[in-house]
Length: 206
Image (cartoon, rainbow, N blue to C red; front, top):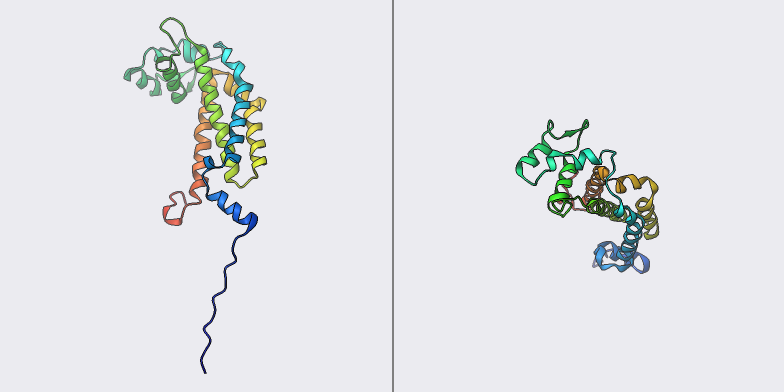
């Protein structure tokens, strides 16, 4: 009497919404217009909301000592960079913030923030706005990685982008440290969440 071979259970095929959802997770963000077009709209709205800040000048509330009167920003040289990152010479009114001050040096000497006679404050404001837009974009991406719906991610990113509490960080040149911190913070969070999706052997964060 012959024995019947055990049959392997059939795997259920993914159909409908489950199949589309799985495909969406493996598809590049930039290949999904339904995701990146809303991101562009969010960035555009945020940029328009903060565009008046580009017409602002420097204020005498720390902008003067951090930028206008800062001897460490005299020229783009190794000596200036060393002074900026030296805790003794780089401390200004009790604050040691070398990275934001270094970005001011880049604005002034490499990006046209000073034409040899006068400062161009709009360049400093523009770079604050660019950093803020990057933070908004990363916020949107993180919300999607956390499996929020597209609509929820849009609302969260837009609220973060145009919330009144962000005005000081963007419109005040000295607060470059805030948007700079945000850029690194959101990048780190995004990278960490992405790392959790890697196979165990390739996951260096756990």
